[in-house]
Length: 179
Image 1 (cartoon, rainbow, N blue to C red):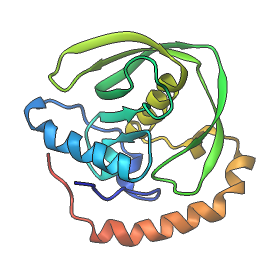
Image 2 (image 1 turned 60 degrees about the horizontal axis):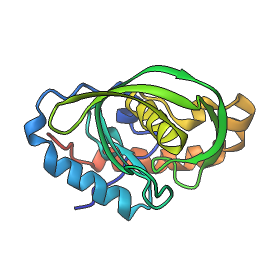
Image 3 (image 1 turned 180 degrees about the vertical axis):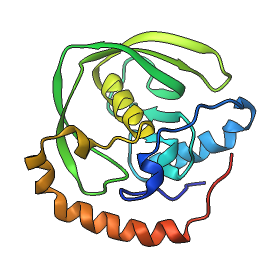
Image 4 (image 1 turned 90 degrees about the vertical axis):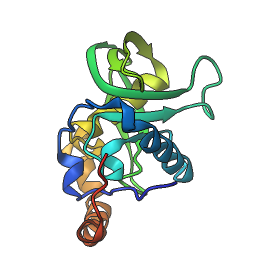
């Protein structure tokens, strides 16, 4: 079942999300997050983007990258190291219609748990590394507009105000999801 995507201006998107401790109840949430991401034509979705205060996100880059594993679940992730530099235009499901050139490290060393709680650590580059960094930013209360210069941010200020205005109304009406 697709969930409502939380937009810029909702306070949950500025919080540092809590770690996942109980892995036994995650399956329905993960299924719903994939459904939500696919319905919105996204490649990644963090839990707080659907109103859930947990450190987890899903990514599916199979439509873009055909090599290697492309569908991922990352829980309690932490970027341990990074290097290189690349610029790429990013969009965000919580910032509809806003696309910005964002500079990020080209590769990361990432530590995380899977849906069973097993720990992993791996070096990742390319689109997957960028998507992980984008979703980790969400879980730490950071948006792509926080990664650009003040001048660039001013260029999308009108859109941000419109998104935020709609979010305030929706946030008051939204029921909190509990997992």
